[in-house]
Image 1 (cartoon, one colour):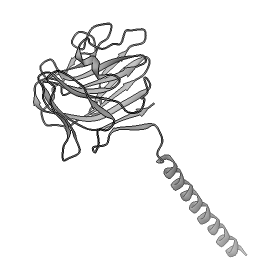
Image 2 (tube, one colour; image 1 turned 30 degrees about the horizontal axis):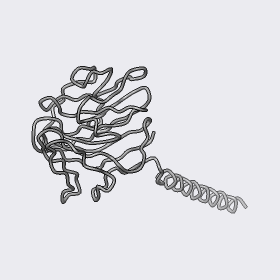
Image 3 (cartoon, helix red, strand yellow; image 1 turned 45 degrees about the vertical axis):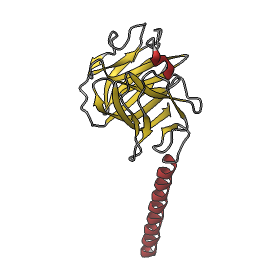
Image 4 (cartoon, one colour; image 1 turned 180 degrees about the horizontal axis):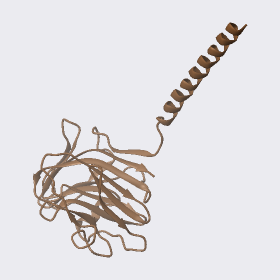
Length: 220
């Protein structure tokens, strides 16, 4: 009788472990299921949701053989802006990879919505090393507290992430926070000029060739 009980107890333990493992496996599958939080802005194949921005003296824009978006050097600004589905105006993140292949100014000017206004994240401006957000309280990236020096190497990919909430703008480069700015109660706006044509969301370069890929937006 004791031997029979031992066998039954062992069988019960095995059944429990099997069910536990199955539930854990199911949990992993459920957590990895796709959601509607991610919006692929550039898939490496098509620019159907984008429109070249009519900057004076703009460079050519195309997808290269590697599926990357190339913004070729123009006289000044070259870029494109979003014309696809309506995007969130707050509580979102934009992530992308970018590199500079030619020139000495910004290789990624990311214009983004913030509530009912817009601003631009500048990477590598004013001679190649300035990062910052234009504009805050009518001061551009070279004049407000988001401005900082960051040494970018040519032909090297950088992982960029911008988080936008009502109260804060945060930027990471290669996983390191480089801008963390409270904007609640402040004026967030575009720098005056041709860059204003980049709304509602746009990417541009200044007298520089920039290459970008893996551009997506995540609602938070």
